[in-house]
Image (cartoon, rainbow over all chains, first blue to last red; front, side, top):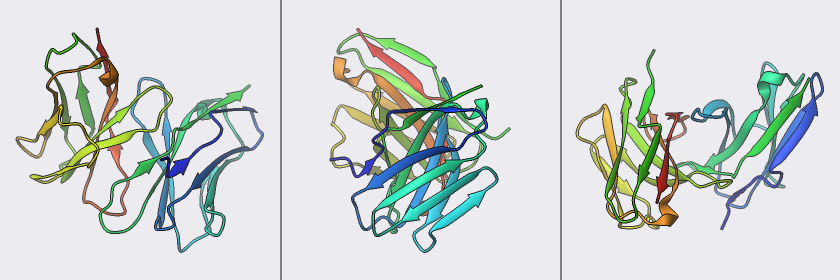
Length: 112
Length: 113
């Protein structure tokens, strides 16, 4: 039972354009969401997060949007760069020392 | 640089032969996690230690055990590996439990022959 769903296994975007990675969740108790980025042969690294009290969080080229009513969040990367090519994992948790629940990931390829 | 280190990078074992994966950290974090990730699947939490307090996930098979002899080291023991246990095993740390990001090692890719 996937509580965090990333329905697109892969995405290709041209360099300089916007990349939009989507994530849906089913557990309404989730109140904190994170995106991780993973290069081949490396572990996932934290990218950006958002609390459920916000609907947007921005960090440089990366912006995460949260739509609680739709149980949907998205990661926008603009402009996309070849170095952004990686697997992106969406993760969620709810308060109370609960562990992170991950999605299956989306492989982003940014084409020069 | 402070980091999370997993050894070995690749591990091959035989069906039924016990295997141990190791993780060390220089971050002095209280919490250490073990995740299992099979191909094209989401990382799945097996268990975590909050300091010396061991927390097993309900659906983690008994075949999987863990030890944390000190703050820096954590081991994953698979007592009798089956073919279905072939996966990437990721170790992660965090300063405390709660709304905080995890720091991951590079993982150990386990193959079972």
